[in-house]
Image (tube, helix red, strand yellow):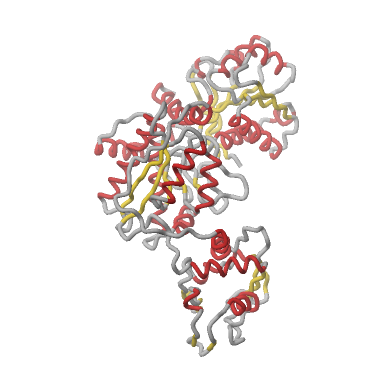
Length: 543
């Protein structure tokens, strides 16, 4: 590889290393919204908890209580998720006709009126008891059988009450941040402190991208307006700033930005308020069950990269038979990565796994190397930072212990490729979220054209490219969602992205059960003779 390629690889890692610093160490200043709404949004009452539960049942046949919901169609029992209310009656309960079958509107104001249907069937208005009989037994208020295509559902009484509560509200429910001519979005970025320049660099890109989009007519005639919530001094303040954009400024979604150490808190906020977050940069995507439908991460976090690294190593027959040691500093981030490796090792059938931690401020490479040599491990997964890996490699070589070593590029020192001892030839492997081949000539030319047109400074390029990619993915979601936009339609549209090419990231694939677009890592090795990185395995999946 030439120097330009080595630089590009380092650049790709840099964005994640900076994010790691933000997560672990950097002080962050208070919030500062970069823009205030020109016209305050109309007051909007959020859904009550009961209405939110009913919405989950209506849209996806999901019971937030965890109770089972099943359905019978033509005497065949099926999961209710295959025949949702919204699937036949529409996302807004407006009613629709498909394949000659008409599913009527479910607005409660509509159901409170007597009806004569085109088939001649007549009935009086629904009440709560009549609605329950229709759902469970398939009969209208007059006792007439409903169409055979109408499923008969079995659900808990409390779930049925939640569904009814949502149907009473659905006719007047509107998603925030939407008007005929605009969609309002937010982003979380550092605006003060040591990361302020990085935040400004990312904001420059997003402002330019959406300004350019708006000049071309927006998406279905809607302009995209961007508002910034400043990253706070801690997770609570960052989350409060984001909440203000949702509750006071009425944003439709969040695009790009940085989680800034508030990963769990922002994910919880997204779920609570049903606000989509598209492409936030983070080292720890929140992917635990139950899946948070609202968040779409573009690039793999460190846990996903570590899982991919383990999968790569597990293909080595020697590792399957030998011992694996996982070493990390005593920090929340490193512990989460190590736990992911342990979990993936179990899935891969590697049983002899030892985990070793060391105090964050107490790293002693010589002492640690001696201790690790005593494990007789054949593979070392090391998640220290700031050049600790080079010190450990040198001390391990001096001690005569040279296992296969697996590292994360985002955590290694800048001069790793030139510092690996000769004793570790062909034994040091590194995972990167992106490599130069991910940035196509067309993709980078598009970025440069935007930069030249809007005259923003190109700096913190990897972070700027991440913001650029998030804006592209969000815009693609808007286009696929259609003119009758809603948050739910945006989520469904993004779930349909398959092998999507941004031109500046690995190809992205999302789905109903997948929220990391590039779930894996590129695995490289250190060529100790040429003192540079070399291909080892290409893209390796995390799961």
